[in-house]
Every structure is written in C-alpha cells, then in structure tokens.
Image (cartoon, rainbow, N blue to C red; front, side, top):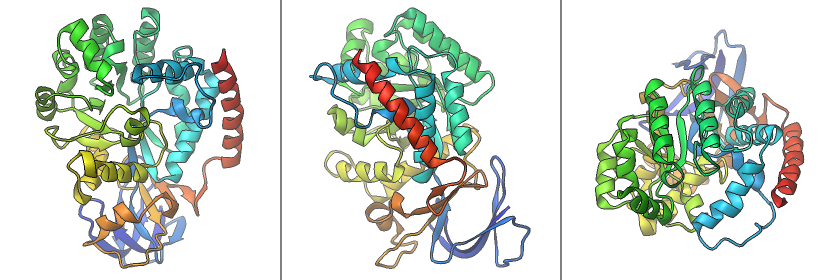
Length: 420
C-alpha cells in the first residue's frame, strides 16, 4: 500500500479536483481510496504537496522495433514515395533485428514510456528474421520495467508465405498464455489465405486485429486492383470489424462509405499524427469515423502528451478537433482496455505531476493547461499497478544507465547490419 498525502487529485473522467490523501493498493487492477487521515498501513509515503495526481497514460499504437533507429544513417536509396520508405528504411531495419536488438528496443521503449507517464502499451512488432519467441522477449522486458502491455506480431506475406506461417505460429503460441491481439501489417501485404488464417486465430482466441489501414494511397490502390474493393470493405468482409478488440491504425485515405462502415463497427481507430507528417502520407480527418478514436505514437517516440498536442495543433487545419475532443482521444484507450477486459490499467496506475504553472489551474481550465502547458517534463513519479516505477524522475525498477548502454551497443550492431 502506498499513501499519497497532501495530493491534488484530478479525476481523469470528470476533471474534478479533490484535495485529499490517496491510498493506493498494489496488484493488477488494484483500487485507490481517498482519506482525510495520514494514519495508514502504507509501506511507502509520497508527499504530493503542490503536485497534481491523476490517472497515468496509455499508448494506443507503438512500434518497439523502431527504438534503435534514432540517428541511423541514410538508406541505400532516397525514398520517393511511402512504399519506398517502407522498403528502404523500416523493412530494412526490421529484417536486421535479432534477439539482443529486440530486447534492447523493448527495454528502452518500456523505460521511455514509463518516464513519459504511460503504464500500458499496445505494441505492433515486426522482426522477420527473428519471429519465434520475439513477443515473449518484449513482454519480459516490459514486465521488468513494470509496464503493462497488449502485444501482437505483424503477420505479412511480404517476406514469403513461410514467414507468414511463422508469424501466425508466433501469434498463436503467445495468445495461448497471454493477452494479445492478432497483428497484420496492412492489406497490401496480406493475401486472402493468410487473412483467413488470421481471422481464424482471432475467433479461436476471442481476440481482434491490429492492422495498418490506408496509411498511404497505395494500400487502397492495391486493394482495388487485386480484390476489387476498398481496404475497409475487405476487412469488413473478413469480419475484422466485428470485434471491439480490433484496432485500425491511421485510416487516412478512406471514402465516405468506408467511414460509415467504421463508425458503425465495434473497431477502434488509432491516430498517429507525427508519423503521418514524417512519412508525408496525408492528414488524419475524423469526419464520419465515430467516437472510437485513440492516439498512438507509431514508434516515433513514447510521449503521449506530445502526441496529443500534435493531434490538436495539426488538426486545426485538417480536422475538427478542440480541447475536449483531443483529451477524449487521449483517454479513449482506457475505454478500449476496460471494454475488452484487458488487465493492467486499473485505478492504481497514476502519475504525479510537478507542474509549475504560472497561472491558476482548476476543473474549468484544466484542458487549456493540458494542451498548452503540461508535458512529460512535469512527470515526477509514476505508479504502475500500485508499484512505484518512477520516483523523482528516476527509474526504480531497472538501471537506466545500463539499459542506455545496452541499447547503444545494439544500435551500432543494427546500423552495421543494415548496410549489408
């Protein structure tokens, strides 16, 4: 039990402010309770005088595999379109990953998420030349740091049907004993046979798809040319939209019919504004897509507050978005996790913010501070499943310097391998 005394608690749903002491239970999906007393059986006490306490964050779509890309050299060919960005950058990188590189990527990503206030991560992994056991490596790394997770392996035909079969096998093996999703790369790299097998896995384990959708125009063009239908129509025909666990990532180039299908479905969308900007693939527009819109990082970084700000500011010119709706998208991931009864996002996941605002902050103006003020630099402490994993901005569960040293070693190996 942890006691947070002298706290200013912000209810993440109502934004109501409450001056109180908070007792935090330890354990998966543990509870919190409010008390006026400082006498408790708490084993640890944190004085939150002058600080804000609220629910921690969660990442709607991440890519552990891209963690070691920062600062890497130029690709062998300068990409001229999105398909070539995939071919010469990301598919070159993921094919080079081995066990140690995956572990370093996962440890660093989990640590970066923790320090940015996220205690739950939904990840979409790819390592075509190290598939078997890759999800367990990531899960173990996240567990070591203290981050809850919902993982999947990116099933695809792009490296041959044998690799697709290995992706399906890795998915089934993982789902037998872990909460997870059935991951696919995108419609344009998944044939009908592999798609059918993925649907069978989804149904067998009562799971959902986690797939990139219409990130670039090529995805739609390929679907029309090879299947005589749109991407959303294809996924709908396979039943992928029937599950509330299904995650449709990006959804940039959808027509009105597709938007209606999505809005009427149980599936959730994840917006990744900065990645879309980086890849120059277009701008997210929520028109007609319904309310099931979450935010992710797409492996660009691990900072959900930054993702929210990007969605808001870029959305001023390309979307219908305001203070309330960007906050709703930021928090929608919690609804997704709870609705589908995934573990690890209970009340006892909290962030303590040391927010040095020059102006008053209260229930009425909190959203203005959320958009224009609060950032990851203000995250002082993080509690995950009732355990302190960040205290005074320092990791408590792992040795940060050792992880950084390990990740640097593995990034150099990765970059060398990518040259071959």
